[in-house]
Image (tube, rainbow, N blue to C red; front, side):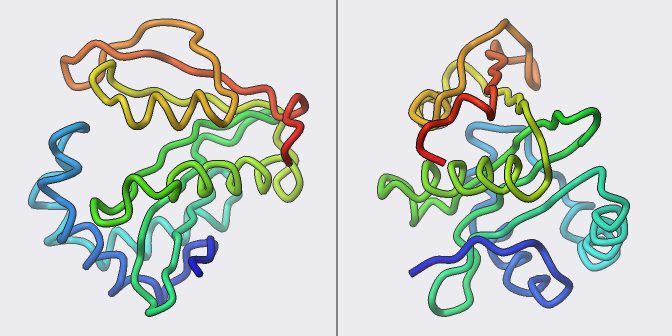
Length: 165
């Protein structure tokens, strides 16, 4: 059984493996992180953990039974009860409800642990999987965006209206 955990320093090795193993898969639907991300991973990981301690971001990883990372579920720009949700799931974990379960759990944490009332998210129009996950969880389309030169949609979720949490 996979468990959603707040990102810690000891996740670094598994997280880097997750990012490397899924780089091409992720790049098919979101802009690639670039070679510098991987070359400077250790320093970046430490900096993100330091930033997380300020309370303006909350990073989570979905950890499988063997300690492998199956997904990332992040809340960024926490201000005035709101944040932006971002997530990515390993290619081998897709199609099994992992993304939907992870997004639901991070929404629960956003409301119950972090005291947030509203989340936003964006995705490209050709990313049917992400659009479906956001819709299943209750996010509604609120506008259009451009992501890496691609047409996309902006979503919003009022956390007070979630019956399943």
